[in-house]
Length: 449
Image (cartoon, rainbow, N blue to C red; front, side):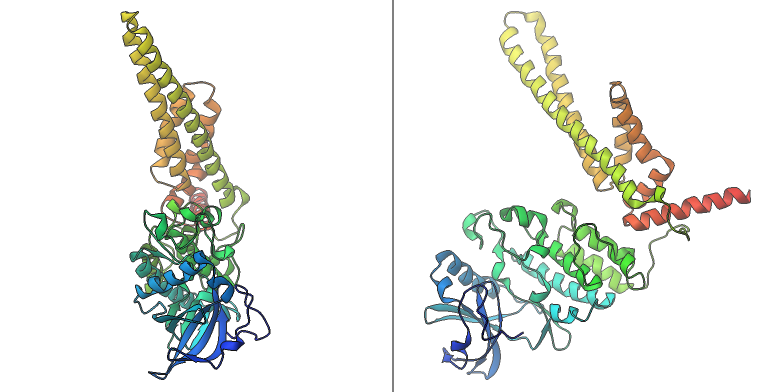
């Protein structure tokens, strides 16, 4: 990717052409080939070995910025710790005209963005690319390093089909001390479309799982040539001939808004990708007869997810209310024990019961909140927990409507079939299709009898 000589670099406001043709520290600059967040990138020749290298040069006005300069020097230290076939290797570092530079291996090839300009990639090819990205991330995360800017421009495709992850300039070291971080507190560095929600909102909370989110975005974009923005169609809907529900599940899990619901490591996501690559023609795990016709609106996955989300939201609301009531009750009882027990000895036992009751309220709040979160994750144990909570809620009389609604959503004929399919890991569309097939099959059996 060449840099237009008449266009100033985005990060610096300076033109790269004065360095083309110059020789310093054993390197001869040949041409400008790109730009990054900290300056321009040149193709150069390492004279001692007569081999091409990539030279990243910090812009002059940024070289005077101590914080920005620290990021650049740390990039060299970070990259020197990464030795992996899917990561661009750092070779050297130095300074010219007061501007630090970094020397890396030169990748003869193209980047993923340029490849994607021709349209969506075959699913097998896309999965192989993301598998290599995840292998690079697994190695980096093992060193305590988060890339924080995974995107097609930073994925290089070398000759021979080797995938290289480049530009760890936005990485940060994971550690308890703020001084180990490459970025300033709460500065959300990265490319917005590929940033995880927590990285956009609070950069200091972003960990290695933000890289897995970005990898999911890249995978979706390779398969559909679009970004997963808003309510997006899953790959199996866009390209049913290329993608199945297993790919949908990888996309859905990697793009979860809550980091706790995503893959927790690059290895676990890579294992899921490898399973699809190892068995590319495998259909969805044992599914009874799927519906052959169009799924009716009453079996819409959006409708099911909406009702499950409603029950989960009510659970969290009641849980928070019980937390507050239980805590207030507990504090009041403890206060009364301290002030009244000495004067009225007979009241002490009754107040202890009030303390115990406050603890029960607090425990109930935790139970409601856990159940609500479990429903969101389609935990197989959540319906049983919800049934017990609905029974308890019904005892209060006022919550009988909620109890009936919760039982209808999770134990109604259609809702139960859908939730069981989701709990097995099926995507919403696949779960609705299976539910439709089961109901059609049972209807046919009834007519046959």
